[in-house]
Every structure is written in structure tokens, then in C-alpha cells.
Length: 155
Image (spheres, helix red, strand yellow):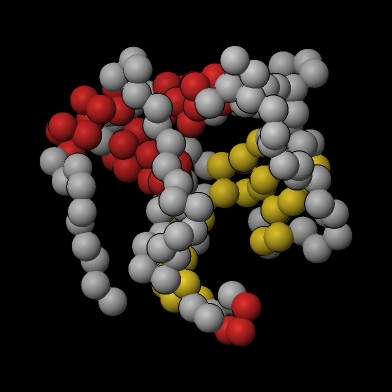
């Protein structure tokens, strides 16, 4: 397995980007390159590397950057904040250990096709719309499908 550093390899310059008040700290290629890249753990990397290891952001700043700031920037109503009436999407993690795990290849796509994966470290639970979908052992088997497609992005 090879590791390729494509962009923003100067961490002091990345720090400036992370701290810029108008930067959206978000990432997704919607899985377009999942056999080559796995950036799904960028938030865990933010908390572990940029917050805990480097101290470039405080934990509250980092959480705000990947929750309410992103929801506001992309006009996703009732997301990114814990307030009455908003959807309860939560991630329970240990600040002392949260990180991305080692990259690995898994064969869980249709027809057994492979993809690159980076497991979560220090995560103890995930709630989607107030329903626990992941616990300490992994995906909760009978949690249903609490997610919903977002279709409304008001101006």
C-alpha cells in the first residue's frame, strides 16, 4: 500500500486555513475514489491530530467547525446544533484517544469489491436523528433507518 500526499502538505500553512474565519472545514468526494482514498475520517483526524497533538484548534472550536459552521455554510436547516427542535445527530468520543485508525482494505462492496477504509478510534457511539446507530461494539443491528435525505436548502 502506498501513501500519497497530494495537497496541503505544509502543516503550518494548513493551520492558517483551519483557523481562517471563512473556511469551511468539510470534505467529501462522495466515495468517488474509495478504492484509492479514504478521507472519511477527516473529522477524527481533525480532533486527534490538529486539536490534541498539535494544539492548532481547541476542541470546542473544532467541533463547531465540523458541525454548526458547516450546517450554516451549506444551509442545512436544523442540523449542527443541539437545540430544541433540531435533529439530534451526535458522536460520542474520547478526546484523549479520538483519531483515525490505520488504513486497511476491506471487501464489503457489492460483488466483494474492495475499498480503502480507516476505522474510527476512540468513538463510543453515534446517534442519527436521536437514534443510536453505533455503540462500542459497532453498528447497532436493529436501529432501523433513522436518517433522511436532505432536500431543502433555504436561501
